[in-house]
Amino acid sequence: MNNNRTVTIFDSTLRDGAQAEGISFSVKDKIDILQTLDDFGVTYIEAGNPGSNPKDLEFFETAKKIKLKNSTLAAFGSTRRRSIKVEDDANVQSLLKAETPAVVIFGKSWDFHVTEILKATLDENLEMIKDTIAFFKKKGKEVIFDAEHFFDGYKNNADYALKSLQAALDGGADSLCLCETNGGAYPDEVAAIVNTVTTTFPKSVIGIHTHNDGGMAVANSVMAVVNGATQVQGTFIGFGERCGNANLSTIIPNLEIKRGYKCLPEGNLQNLTSVSRKIASIANMQLYDFTPFVGNSAFAHKGGMHIDGVNKNSRTFEHIDPALVGNERRFLVSEVAGRSMILNTIQKIDPSIDKNSPETKEIIDILKSMEHNGYQFEGAESSFELVIHRHLKTYKPFFQLEHFKIIGEEPSADKTACTSAIIKVKVDQTSEITAAEGDGPVNALDIALRKALDRFFPELKNVKLTDYKVRVLDTKNATAAKVRVLIESTDGKEIWTTIGVSTDIIEASWKALVDSIEYKLLNNN
Image 1: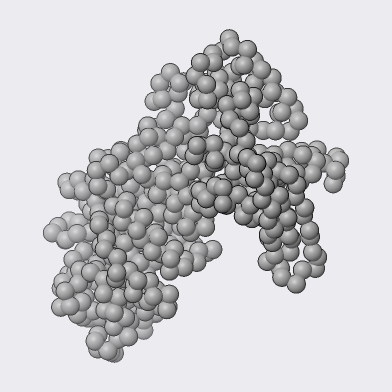
Image 2 (image 1 turned 120 degrees about the horizontal axis):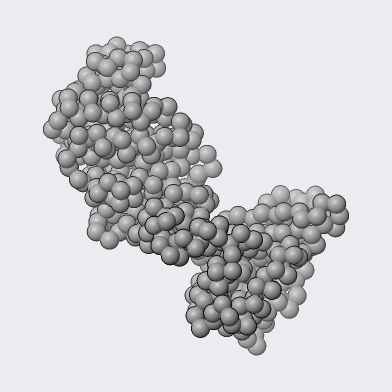
């Protein structure tokens, strides 16, 4: 069992995460994530395979000029090919050119892969592991050995899997990472095998690298640490090949808060939510609302009994204080939330209002009327806050629409910009008119509105739409039906959702879009 209460965090978002479907990092994206992770304080950042593509080569050339404060940068590559000297291997040479202080060398630990994929003998593979690691140690590198398919290999031939680790140690490896590459192992299997490895190699640093194909990557990682692993590999928000990698934004707080392991520099855990959302924004991936600890719904309460309980003592329905991870509690406005929840939202804006104030009844009546007309503020609390602000006259709208025009073109010569929008807005006494093309009317309107407001409110450059949902409310009216539009937005730190309702889908979208921008500007000011 592990008596060392420190666990090093090894982030592979830029390498393993880049293999996720839908992810395509630019070099700038990778640099932004590198600096975000360094500021956050992860121990290692694995940034790619310099021998695999020109983009990774360009990244490592740029990264050489950046002085990291907390993290060690690592390049990733394989053992030398069979029947070739290590110094003559092109992949090995590209790893040297990356000039990173650490290298991650992956090698086969499953005899089936050695004989069927590499077409090598078992002894040849052990020599390949040892030779490659020894070569990099002579070059002054810190070397992490990734034992690929270790758990499947151990279950098939435990003796050989352990020999692959010994070969790495014989070459001088600084740490051994056990890779659960196919993602199908159970936590009890991982616990037992890691315990055997840490007992067999008691003086070695043992890491764990899991995939989520069975939905158990986080559990497997935590059980590995409990059984002696002191390094955890994963990606932020869990994206990666197939079903993804172990989610570091879930593992880190579980280890730090629930088990007392030190994973980050003191005080950095409270930045977990903002870091997760920033990385999702850079990756152009939506952060799933129900992601533990950092998701928008991680501490969201809807039932009246739950809300009442949390108001009296948060331990009734929350496993941790959301502030520990930089998230916040949310009470959802809904038909089951109760009067106290609505009053709670009102008092965020004007603490002087109580349950007997006339404003409370007026706002509840407005809420009921809007819900009758198709509005649903559960999950769109930002729009509800604006309803309260408008009724209480606690803010002045930041801009006024003078007019807009949508021009559609079908068929379009350019499928990426098939709609144009012309918009005129007024800020104070100054009018601004702009035009933009977009992929559909809402996208064109969004781009045109941002262009019009850009010189007045430059902070909107960081805001983007991350989700757009349309719900038809009365299908019996066919194309004349009323629709509800929900727009989710983020500035890379916060996430908010706004709503619009109309029989005109563009008008409904416009209402939600305006609320999104007004909410951002109101919070900034």
